[in-house]
Length: 449
Image (cartoon, rainbow, N blue to C red; front, side, top):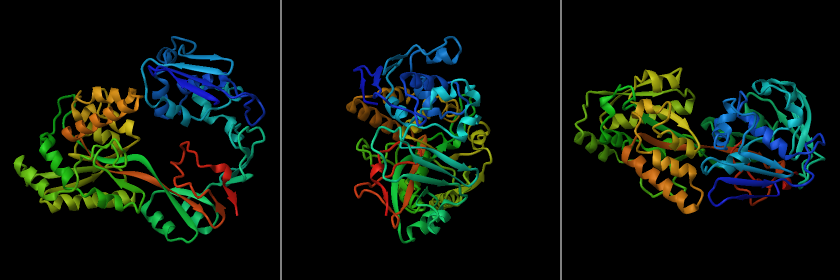
């Protein structure tokens, strides 16, 4: 894009494409490509919910998806200019649009959107960035070579080989690859001890937390978790810092959905205070013979270690605890509901807080359809002015600490590793970002030593 503007009311986004942009096959990139991509994303079989939710804010999107209109009325293309008109302000519209991968209309317009990700296009895809597709040996590797039609600054690395591997750590440590990412504690321990590998932490906001099974909209209640003092006590009994350390540097302890590193965090939260936890349970009349039931559905080593640690903390204050592993987390958490606290994950921040909405298809089954969060959630999703964003986030944090429907434990990021014995990157790069997300890594300055 050459430029973009956003209207004062946050409803109109106008983008102007640069002149002479081309796909890797030499065909021009046009405003029609943008329009086609949004329309196709709303009808395709495999599209991340973040994008369909985002595009759902565009005026006329609902009618288009329902088959009541042949196009989306809120998208207009005029020459190099594309205009989006929204039905309501959406704070994450720009972010999601920036992370969306646009595809060439001229290659795919005749493909059924439901079959898009199974068509022959992917055998030799047409691209628009630094590189174009080179060759692929199925199950072994594919190459990316310099795209002569790219109009930006060309990268110093002419060719990239992407290897298929069952073990990224082995490939990295053996020298078979120069870049890999992971957040497995056992892998991080090895990578951190390997000479020549430089790790870059990305605090991607994927939250791990406990949810409380309290009451469903069907009237099915769980009396053991109804008292907020009990919920607050369980939160205080768990040492979040110690749990985060189990991830060997790839996790950050949290006490609310507003990360500790966020300037909008109020500083309030439920930290580690086992003595206060015991006092609250006594005050609430907790039955010390009751067995607290923990449900979890992640079976990796680190998640199991987290659950074992939580059991230890809760038993240390005198609670009886049992754990159950679920093969079908969604059903067991929100339909079967034979548990008191459930170990869960989601991200980023808007997804974390949207779970509190009374309209949530799943969470209303454990929070009883409480409407307390609705106004603050809507304010957060629509806020564009910095002061409004701050106010909305702090209102959500206040409600979260008042209700204690979740226990935030930590956010899991990624460690991105570079073989800096072979690859040089700019010294001012401290964050390689979350894999799969757009981030400016000044990649055009990377080079092979």
